[in-house]
Amino acid sequence: MIDFFRMVAPVLRWIDPETSHRLAITALKYGLLPDPATVPDDPALRQDLWGRAFVNPVGLAAGFDKNAEAVDALGRWNFGFVEIGSVTPRPQPGNPRPRLFRLRPDEAVINRMGFNNDGAAAVAARLRGRRGHGLVGVNLGKNKDSDDAIADYRQGVLALARLADYLVINVSSPNTPGLRALQGRAPLTALLEAVLAARAGVCATDPAITAPPPVLVKISADLSDQDKVDIAAVALQTGIDGMIVSNTTIARPHGLQGRHRDEAGGLSGRPLFALSTRVLSDMYRLTEGKLPLIGVGGVASAADAYAKIRAGASLVQLYSALVYHGPELPGRIVRDLPGLLKADGFANISEAIGVDHE
Image 1: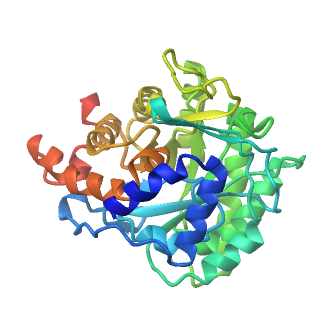
Image 2: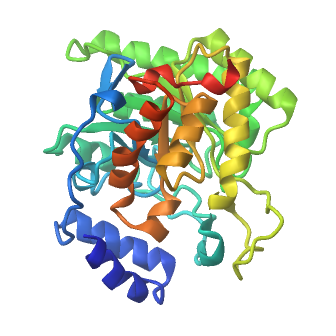
């Protein structure tokens, strides 16, 4: 598989990034790509969270498979879980193209996609037709033209809660106007209370749901200290099940070299690592380690993943690094993580979560 990726990568560099991504999803959907070598499960990486068994902590972040077209194929890339979306109640085309840019010298990506997706009904139909059994999270968003964000997220829960191993309330994308304002204390409290009530309603009417899907909120990297305090307080007060830290940033760190560095949108990849890990560490401290956190932003190696775990992440996610390191990357991280744990005297990943705070 490494040779295959190295063979096609130079060609893909000359193709528009969004077209290249579409080709990759189509190839995965129809089984046209060889699977990476399978890395055996290591008991040191296994965790049970929210009543779900995670064979390893490395997941695929939302944005790669927005419409659940290639979930089962991606599950064979050595991911412990795959997150699809963001999904809005109604289909929407997203922002005008071009809206996806590679910053190759920086191993970074800027996107202003704008929640382009096929809508909740189409995504639900695909998830019902799955053949695989890997863990799948569903990331929910609001339609750009919606005047009622709470209603949109409730619709997402009602349509997809039965099909998700966990649900993500995405209030942190910089590419939907006004979305990040939902992270304020009052609007976030109202939103999360409504979402939890919707989940309870779904579970009450469906006896097939034996373990309600946990509800997580995905937060921004661009938060003030007071924002973090407020979000942590709301998370603990409402009783949500966890957080994903963090989404892309609208900041542009000094030293970016890619020619698209001044494009509008959210920056992800290597330059996001330090900022997102700092926010992760802050949220672990502010929630006193009481909520499982998923660390995302700039993960491109086992050392990166381990740094997130030590900062407070129970699980980690990646996406942008696949552009530069290919589909073997998740397997390399899963293969190398146990050695890092063992070197520090940990028998299981759960022992390492948040140790940098001790």
